[in-house]
Image (tube, rainbow, N blue to C red; front, side, top):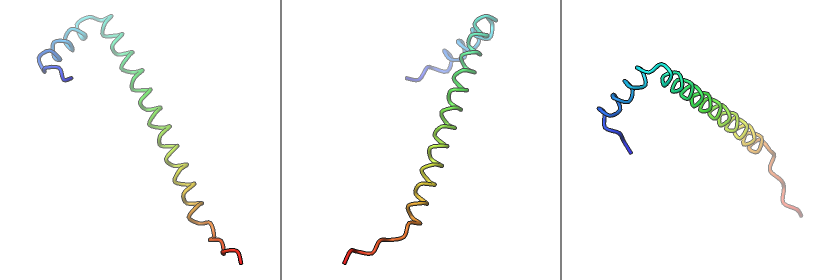
Amino acid sequence: MTAPTDDLHSELDRIASDSQTHTLFRAELDRAMAEHVAKEAELTAFAEAAAEALQVLVRLPTREPAA
């Protein structure tokens, strides 16, 4: 759901004009950004580990069929 631009600007003006609301909004924004960065780092580490595991699998010698 997308808020109309005027409503968004009004809400941002309201937040900016009230120091307590601004402080709470900023704290929540900082928390959400830190959470996003942490998740991004976790996903990057997972992708790097998966890439390393695939490289190991690709390098494994092929087995000769049993006689």
